[in-house]
Image (tube, rainbow, N blue to C red):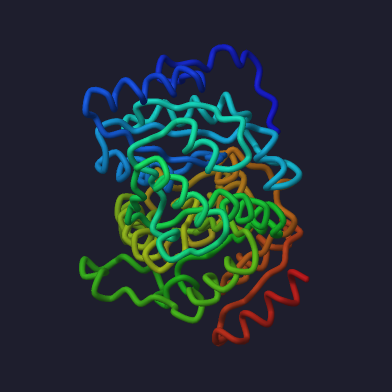
Length: 359
C-alpha cells in the first residue's frame, strides 16, 4: 500500500461513518427519496469509476458509494493491493460531484452491505447484467429481500487491475530514444524541401518508415525526436517560420498515424569555414553564418531535445538514429548509438535491422 503522510487532511463532510450512513439512508427513504448504492474497492480511481457514478446518480435521488476496507481488498486482490488506503479511496470518491456520500465498509461481501444499509437500488455496471456468479446472484437476492431493485448503468468498462497491469508492462518495456532525420527519412522529399509555396501538395510521407516506427513503438517504449539540418534557411531558400510550419503540419499527420514526436529540433545555420569555402558559389545570409553551429553530426540538438523533455541519455536503454545521410551516421557515432539507414529499404528490412540493434 502506498504510504501517504498526513492522512487526517483527506477528509470531507461527504464521508460518513457506517452507522451515520445507515441513519442517513433511512431518513432519506422516509422522506420518499430513492437511494442508490454502488459498492466496490475503487482503488486507483479512474475515468471508468467517474462515468459509472455519473450514470448511477441519474437512476436515484441520492447516491451512496460504499468502499471495501483495506483488509478485504488485500485478501481479494493479493500483494500490493490496495494501492490507496480506504480513507484515501473514500476521499477520492467523495470528491466526485455525482456522489452524495461515501462510506468505508468492513464487510467482505456486498450482500452484508446491502442488508445493513438498505438502499432503494443496488447499482452495477453493464458487465454484471448477464453474470450469474455466486457473488452477484447473492447480491441480487439481497436487494430483493429488502424490497429494493437492481439497476445497471450502460458505461464502458475500465479496470483498475488492467490499468496497473498496463503500467507494469510499460515500465518493464525497454526504453529507446529514436533520433529521426526529417527530409529523406520521415518524408521522401529532399533537396531543401519547403522552397515551394505549394509544399503541402508536394509533401510525400515515407510510408515504410512510418509503419516501421509504429511497429517499433509497439515493441519498445520509444521516445521519438526529430533532429534536422536545415541549411536552406541560411541559403535564403525559405524562412525558419517555413521550417516550423512544415514541422507542425507533419507533427499533426504523424500523431494521427500513431507516431508522437516528443521534440522537433532543427539547425538553420552553417559553419563560417564552410561558408568561406563556398564563397562565390553560394550566397549565405550573414545572420545564419556562425563560428560554431548545432548541426549534425554534432549532438547539440539531441541534448536540447532531452533538456526540453527533462530527460537524460542515461534514461534510455538504447539509442538509435534513423536517417539517410552521412551526417546521420556521424550523429549515431557521436552518440555511440546504432544507425539505421533508410535508403532503399522497405518496412520488413527496417524492422529486421532494428531487431538486430535492440536485442
